[in-house]
Structures are given as C-alpha cells and as structure tokens.
Image 1 (cartoon, rainbow, N blue to C red):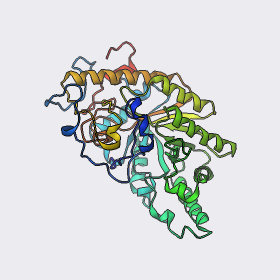
Image 2: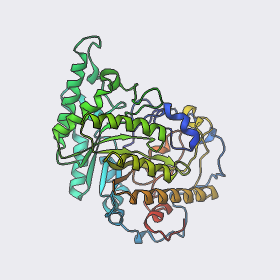
Image 3: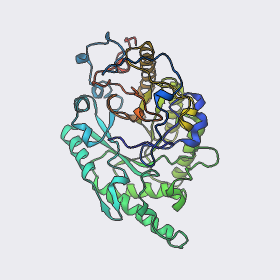
Image 4: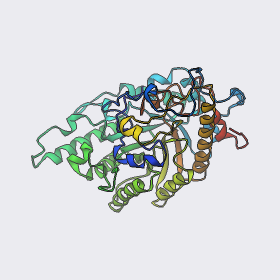
Length: 411
C-alpha cells in the first residue's frame, strides 16, 4: 500500500532545471501529504493529450508476444538481483502476484518494515505485516531487502520524548535508537539479505553535508548514522548494511554523501554499500551521470544497489515540485504523445540497465513498484496517471521491458 507523499518527497525526477529543488526534496513516503491542487485539469499543456484512454499502458500493439518474455531474474542472474517494491497486500493481487513470482529475485518492503508502523512505542513492536512479507518471500524463494531502520519521515515521537535540555537527553535517545535497531534486526536475522539502515541522511544544499532538519540530527547530531550502523552490525554481523539516498546522480549532492561515507569509513563504521534510489524521468539524468555515481561508490570499495527505480513520463519543470505550477498535463494512452513517451522511457531504461550490467559492484536493481497499475507517481507531484515501470497496467511487458532484455528490439 502506497503511503501519502509529502511536498518535499523528491525533486530530481525531471531535467536539469530541477537542480534548484535540492532544498525541497524529501524521501520515501509518510509524513504530511502533498496537495493535489495541481491536477492535470489545471496544469500547463504538454505534448498533445487526448480524452481517450485504455486499461493498458503498453505503447504498441506490435510488441512481442507477452508469453515469450524471459524472466528478468533469469535474464540478469549473472549480473544482479531483480527487485520490486511491495507490501503484503499487493503480493496476492493481479497482476502483481504473477509478475513477482516470474521476475523477482528480490523484494523491498515498501512500507511495512519502517519504524512507523513497527515501532508502536518504546519496546513495543508490531511485526504482523512485515512477517507476512517475510513469509511470502520465503515461500517463493525470493530474497528480501530490509527497508528501512532510520528515516526522518518515519520517526515516531517516542524516540525523542524527554527534556532536550537535560544533560542525559542525548544518551537517552541513543539508547532508544540502539534498542530499537537491535530488536528489529534481531527479529529479522537470517530473513533479510541487507538493510537500508539510514535513509536519506544527506543535506540538500552546500550549507551542510547532513540533513540537519532530521529529528535524528536534531537529537544526536551526525553521530546518529554511525550509532545506527554499529547497532545493526552488532545485532546481525552477516547482513549487508546500506545508506540509501536519492539524487546520487547529482554531483553536488553525491559529493556531500561521499563526504559522509568518508567520515564513517575513517571511523571504522560498518557500511557495505550505497543505495541509489533513481526516481527519474525520461530526460534526466544521463546514463553517464549514473555511471559516475556508481564509480564514486566503487572507489570506496562499497557495493552499489539501485533501490527505487522508476522513470516518469513527465519531464516537469522545477516549479511543479515547489508549488505544483507548470506541471505537464495528463498524457493519455492511444495518443502520439504517449507513444513518444513510451519510446523515450524505453531508451532511458535500456541506457541505464546497460550501465548497471557494466558494473560488477551493482548487486541488486529494484523498481519502486511492480506494474503501472500501482505507482506513487500517480499522485506525486500532482494527481495524474503515470506509467513509470516495466509492465503496463495489465501486467504485460512494455517497450521498456523489451528494450532491456533484447538489444535488437527497436522501441
């Protein structure tokens, strides 16, 4: 189940004009909701749209027979795990169930393994939904990514209760964080292959390497990242530990993240890899920019995971994210604009998967969702139908799918 997305969710889904949005980006769901005032009816015009639509988001009736589609987990087995974000409810639904069973070698918990809902109160946990996802994965031989332990948007207030002026306040919050991570990681020990330990800790502008608005930073300063990593390692020394963030393809933000990583490595903190969210668009970023991001992580002897990939068909201006202004109008299926968007999307997916496959450090590539019938981009940054994934609303492979599995396919 998709969470409500706040205004500061992510900005870099669009072209280079969105670089100005770095101070307005946020992270993977939760918190306040974004106003839907910028719906397609009030958006600026885009490429031609039509009132006609269909139930499928495939781009062409001439696509190969869906029954001939190879299993992605088999096709890319020599390169990396193929992941999809899901929560328990969607795993039994159509077309998600069949797609997961055929294509996924990894699942990321979309929301059920975050501190909210797991951390009900201090020392009290609700593992029901997370355990259901674990059960589905184990029954079907699918590996599970733990997502996530520490994130500013799902940080229950009980972590920070107390008098901030008290000399013992910092130690109190530290102990709560350590206990929570110890208990949760221990509960899932042997059931997940990695954890996004800290999610979206990087600063949005040059004023700080860190996200200083995070309640974790407010309470503990930058030390909370090291504290979290060490607690997770102590609870399960065998699980891979990641920092996960968005806009890693942007050189300025990546430099701030790498500065954090360099500091952690100097301190000997346990860190195995970096997660690159890659919520992007058909025009941004370039494959070369992503390639450089992977190289910068490799230079620090760390693993790369692509954690939340989706490719929006809307190349919105920065104003769409700061004030829902100038957002492109709905692109409907059955139009020339839609056909062009599917082609551009396919080419972007192909370019990126070519880069991923060229890096042995890339061990997992996950899309944020399964098929176009379930995507958070239908309501962010405004309400309109988006088609960002490899499978259409009926679960059939799109041009983007064929582009990544068949080099001879022409989108």
